[in-house]
Image (cartoon, rainbow, N blue to C red; front, top):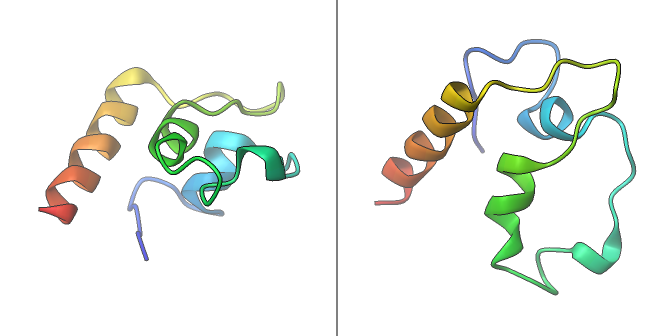
Length: 68
C-alpha cells in the first residue's frame, strides 16, 4: 500500500482520475506496462486541479525507490 503525505481526503488514484469509472479494457492484468502510465498521467475531472508535474515526478521517483 502506498501512502502519500501530500494527498489528503482520498487516494492517489482518486486525485489522478477523479471519480470516473475504471475502464476494464485498460486493466493492469491486460496491459501491465500501462499501470504506471495510467496512475501517473491519468485524467482528472474538470472540477479538480491536476497534480503539477514536479509532484508527479516526485511520486514516480518515490515509487521507483520503493521498488528497489
